[in-house]
Image (cartoon, rainbow, N blue to C red; front, side):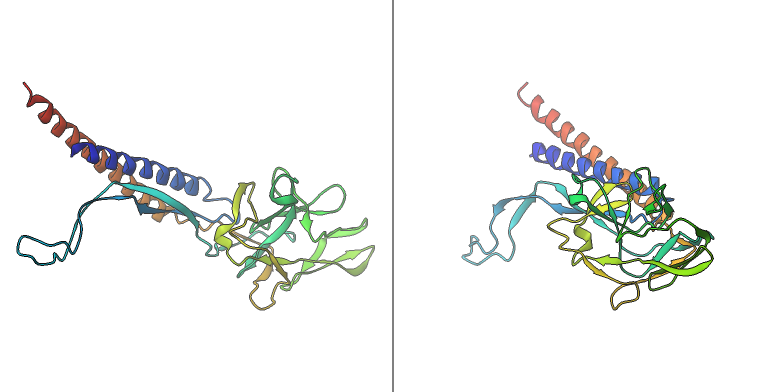
Length: 268
């Protein structure tokens, strides 16, 4: 019946609307440091079984197929694209990019991830207490804490590929601290909370710490930032396809409406 087509087409329009929202967010963050784009996955809904496969036909034979009419689609999930973004040279000694797998860890509000969050962004700054912080609005402190004592020559900072931090303090070279990276069994299960941050969830599993360069962990590149991995061309192509699919579903609604109009006139 045309009513089924109406409902199926409506689910398609709703799903395409969600996909367009995700594409818009990807494009909006094309210049966000360490941003990972998302894609929308779909799944079909229930089916109306009008004839079972294998039923007996008029000749007493088993049919090889059945008759199923689907009831539309829905968004099943959004999935992160965890491919590395390109490296952009900045010349700032506190800018770090991860080459390979791993996330930086920062402190956050207790109500968000139990006070711990993770990020690929490496645009770090030093706050008024000498602590290394992430360069976002809230400025969360890096964990494990890295503190630059008074008298540190901020132009002399060296961060090695394995995460060791050195600087001149009162004219002497000192090791200031050690950067760590964190991995998850299922990074696709991390919760996105904004501010370039992700937090642990039941789906992601528990974070495992390690030093940069350890087996399974990436290395650090000083004076570089990891750019967003959004591909604007692919996103624009996806936007066009989404718009056309939305339009086709709207045409289905129009066709179903015309069929219903024909049926309604039969009583006259």
